Amino acid sequence: MGMSRFTLNNKYKAVVIGGSAGSFQGIVKILSHLPPDFPLPIIMCLHRLKHVRNGFVEALSIKSIMEVTEPYDKEGIKKGKVYLAPANYHLCVELGHYFSLSTEEMINNSRPAIDLTLGTAAYVYRDKLIGILLSGANRDGGLGMKYIKDRGGLTIVQDPKECMIDTMPNAAINATAIDYVLKVDEIVEFFTELNKQYK
Amino acid sequence: MKEIDIADLKRITELVKTKYNYDFTNYAMSSFKRRILRILELHNLNVDELIKKLYDPAFMEDFLNEITVNVTEMFRDPPFWRVLRDDIIPAIMLNHQKIRIWHAGCSSGEEVFSMAIMLREMGILDNVSLIATDLDSNILDNAKAGVYNLKNMELNEKNYIRFQGTSSLSKYYKESNGKAVMDKTLVENVSYRKHDLVKGEVFNKFDLVLCRNVMIYFNQTLQNEVLKKFHESLFKYGYLAIGSKESLIWCDIASKFIVVNNEEKVYKKIKD
Image 1 (cartoon, chains in turn cyan, blue):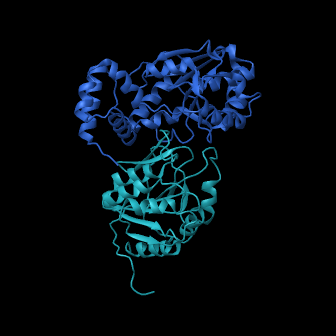
Image 2 (cartoon, one colour):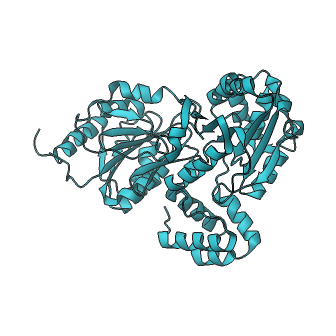
Image 3 (tube, one colour):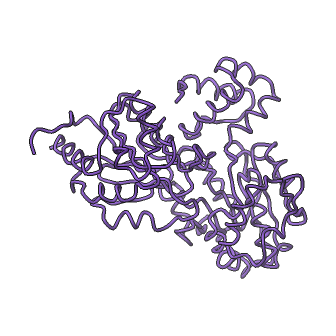
């Protein structure tokens, strides 16, 4: 491979990923190809069944290089870990780099709502955040991506042409100027390139 | 996404503290900020206008109602209710004829009705004294009234089925004008009281305290303070139930409890 197509540096402190219908395969591929020493926390908000508390984190953990957990309320955010928003809770990032959970009203018909996780992460991490939005059948996440961009963060959406359902990435593309529109394989490559910045 | 300055949030909390003695200083920041933004939007106010309106005690009542999160379900986390029915309540009954239960932060009362339904199905509702508290008197009125949107009953019914109740949830309410009106005999012995977990005193002793998904709106300092009050409010070997994604691990009081059920977050007080 020649020169990287990505303009990168090592200022980033966290990655936040949103996804819904049709994003599971992509997420698994990304998690299973992460560099083993990936230096940032990855915070995931994926739409999921409200009443099914167990199974999802286990399904993601099987293939993931990094440990995947559902954080407890007020749990500190640590590098080298993948966090998944628990069923039926909003997952928010607080100043001081820890999580808080909330049972507030659904947003975009969703709890967890991607807009909330992305928005609160952008508030805390500002330009040191990378936001990624994958396939989904709902507009949730579009506003969150705009907020990341407005705060100076880096934005990536899955290429709508590759998405099983492209409503979600298109909502982000319509809401703000997305930095990179990538296929899942290219997102994997992005993580590899990003990891090199921290060597 | 709209923003509000931390300085403005502080002006609001200071006023509410000095004028009404409610202290929101140690509420979790991101959700508190969202609640304030929601109120500003709902009433179409800016921060200065909100502060002016907060001098009116009637508006303060609305403010309390909107600042607190009142989204809840009957039998939320059905496996928790199964553990309560099959393990915790029978364990308490081994040593007591009468059980005393406190729902701390009962909101619109769905959890109280869930408890009453469960206890009636166990045939012990009359042996139990239930106290339900909230800091918002409007929501306490709703809790007492037991009138819910019919569309919520669909989810409540699903939860009840997963809880494996012995009947059907529809047996416990009647439909009227598009609402679900709960059977009041379930809660005729429940005492509903206004009580603020932050400023309120310890007022009684209990065998079981439920405070699920309430302390998630507090920061860790406040969580520690409130947990101390719960510890004091429990008889020795009494039980504390918190939300499934809350934990006592980081709390000062952790060593005075043991974990009874880690999945459902039920703890037992073992030291005074």
